[in-house]
Length: 202
Image (cartoon, rainbow, N blue to C red; front, top):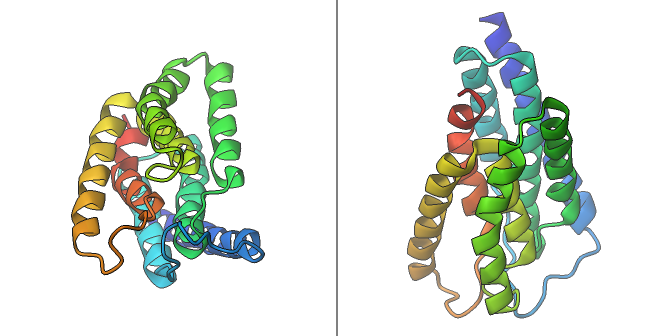
């Protein structure tokens, strides 16, 4: 029980740090007129959900290394969610740095499936970003998707991202600001966070 509570507190702290990192990065960024409508991220919900994720990871028997990887991914998910909601961008700091950490881990362990999974899920979203010229699908989203693939593995990531796209499409139909791009990072982050225990502990 102590380990579960400690993991919950640790993950909650990671989420808290990610929220404030996002605020710092987005402080001087003005949302684009043709970008997603700025909003307010659900900070309390994100921190509480992160604590629950940490507790579940320990409850499911995650090893210390797996918890560390999950913490890196969680930081990226929360920071990306907040940044995309607040200023309509997903900074490279919150995607490429964690992705590089996982790539280094992949090389060190000679587990090439991590890099392959990132590439497999990145390609279709990169094509979407090219075709939409960053309007319907941004490059920040595509990089976040690559991190999702690296963390979950290609099969689970494709399922999670399909659900994220479906949820985004449904959410778009009920928006008042139709015609503007949506902040897609929250959908990616939510789907990845839900699937993370299955992806890390396999």
